[in-house]
Image 1 (tube, rainbow, N blue to C red):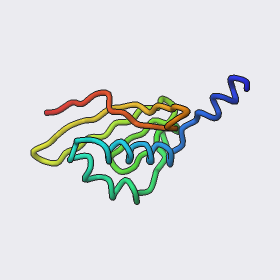
Image 2: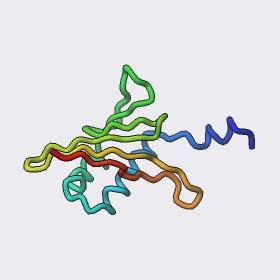
Image 3: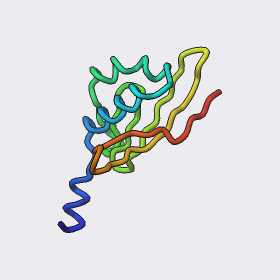
Length: 104
């Protein structure tokens, strides 16, 4: 398989990103993120008109090209920004992983 075919196979779609984020949130210990599961499951995925590789699911901002995500939770007394990456493995497919948390 040539490199361009491999890259095409590893392209992340909005639905794959949504599924990876939901799975991550379901297995996380962050209750403030778990509250967003029903919304994540049903919300429309919208493309960012200014940046074609970005999609949004509510407050979740997903960069499909860079394979990164960011979400801000503003639910007093919690204010936190979660950043993370999407990874692809043959065994698991697309997964999401939080890499940084900033809290105020």
